[in-house]
Length: 86
Image (cartoon, rainbow, N blue to C red; front, side, top):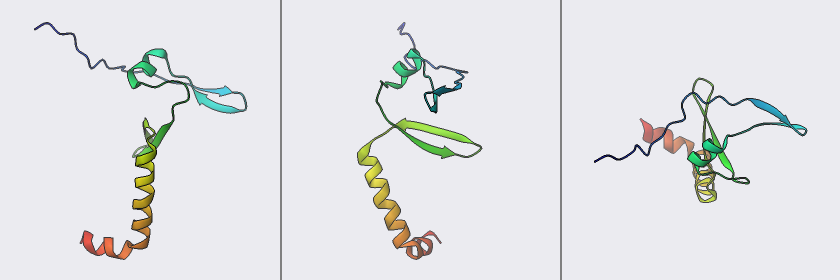
């Protein structure tokens, strides 16, 4: 079976921070936007990773709400979670 690979990787893509009006931003290429299935106006969720890394994922309001509920639970029942972790 001669199928072309569908998992094309944009390796070594470098983005430069640029001034956009009074702000700073990143310009994403058409190819990268297409690969990530993003369009103008889409929102991204940013998660800080170890060693100065960042993970960007499409923003999902349902997931954001669930995470806020989990954070409130962790704060309210911190001692319980610590005991369960032992």
